[in-house]
Image (cartoon, rainbow, N blue to C red):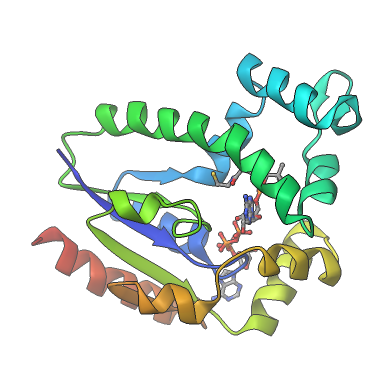
Amino acid sequence: MSKIIGLTGGIGSGKTTVAKMFTELGVPVYIADDAGKKVLDLPKAVNALKQVFGEKVFTDGHPDRKKIAALVFGNPEKLSMLNRIVHPLVKNDFNLWLKENRQAPFIIKETAILFESGSDLGCDKIITVTAPLEDRISRVISRDQSDREAILKRIDSQWTDEQRTAKSDYIIENTNKENTKQQVVNIYQILKHL
Ligand SMILES: CC(C)(COP(=O)(O)OP(=O)(O)OC[C@H]1O[C@@H](n2cnc3c(N)ncnc32)[C@H](O)[C@@H]1O)[C@@H](O)C(=O)NCCC(=O)NCCS
Ligand SMILES: Nc1ncnc2c1ncn2[C@@H]1O[C@H](COP(=O)(O)OP(=O)(O)OP(=O)(O)O)[C@@H](O)[C@H]1O
């Protein structure tokens, strides 16, 4: 079985950027955000979303991520209701993906909420990506055209960098991309010999 390396970091820290660097090195990478989007359209998710939140989170019969985000971020109770619908489906999707990649010596599982969701327990090693808070906010604003308030609400629903780094095996400081790439290569060399 492949070793599972968790890759985490708060919103906008650069997890996906780091994940792509691992992909370039030939490592299979699972992006939980992508899986979260995929499973949202499964009948199981659609039915549960209708039951829990009602038609107001749908547009043209499909779950509307903007509407869901506006409802759950800033409301811990609603966020946990959403998590209870989506996380088991993502877990299932990940297990199937893992089987398909079992020949790899190690794989990367990228998720912002590795610790919050308890997925850290299934990992052999954990990498946290950090970046200064203001850099994270401005990077997400330019990537998603979202506003500061909405980003801060997501940040408030996640662990802090201090909490994440205290429980991680490796820390990547994502300031400039060239330097980040070097840190990725260094960690890759260590992971190859686990
Ligand atoms: C609320 C939803 C519809 C918003 O969709 P949207 O396209 O705007 O965001 P996207 O999924 O691309 O996530 C962007 C970032 O938001 C943050 N975020 C997303 N979900 C969560 C969550 N449950 N808790 C805390 N932060 C979260 C992360 O930093 C993530 O990288 C979507 O994030 C969702 O369904 N979330 C619940 C499932 C989940 O936890 N997915 C993430 C990993 S499984
Ligand atoms: N070192 C860097 N310098 C400048 N821009 C960067 C750097 N790293 C990442 N970015 C940019 O910042 C934005 C956020 O990065 P990325 O999408 O990798 O973060 P993330 O942690 O995966 O975010 P999310 O939690 O929202 O999924 C992207 O547009 C990315 O291109």
